[in-house]
Length: 244
Ligand SMILES: C[S@@+](CC[C@H](N)C(=O)[O-])C[C@H]1O[C@@H](n2cnc3c(N)ncnc32)[C@H](O)[C@@H]1O
Image (tube, rainbow, N blue to C red):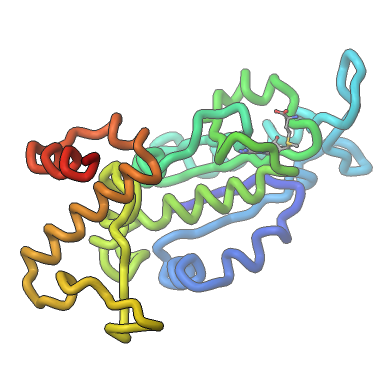
């Protein structure tokens, strides 16, 4: 997977891409993250990328020209044959979720445009027709953190990025439920014992316990998720019991 990120703050990405899973994935050539400074594409001799909004109002708006020039240049270099997804980080986009991360992992190239200030000139959207993605209903100062969130979540689906391929499928949200509680040594800590089912060594019992706890957690913390998934007859019986 190749990511191209368009930003006016390229340094923002240095440390996060240089840690643990993403660092290893880059070193092993499983992903590459190419950060482009939008200022390199401006025709303005002062390298300005923003201007005041037409119609007045506070703040500045990122001009269309350097963003479109950067995106077109990168797109041309990738070639028409390669699958490329253009994403615009925006609080007005579709809410980012696990299933979108999985869907995006199917592309060979992902370009992410990071806005700043009051946002970007609307004509960038008209011309590039990006997939507008929001990482939540709150407003951040820029699209750099959302870009990193997207890169991290998507890369977990790239084969071999995680130690074992099954672990991403076992994560919270992957099957529409929250993940079951987890424990490690010691068996007893400050008077609290790890559940006996997990210590039983009986694989079936462990699986049953985990499914029940996943359902219980989801029911307690995110009942809305249960509306969106197909439950087995056994799940329905467990939920009925839990509700009592
Ligand atoms: C201060 S915000 C602009 C918000 C804009 N004035 C509005 O009300 O929609 C600057 C940039 O941060 C990014 N951003 C802010 N919040 C975001 C979110 N929740 N998800 C994705 N991107 C976000 C976008 O790239 C946006 O252009």
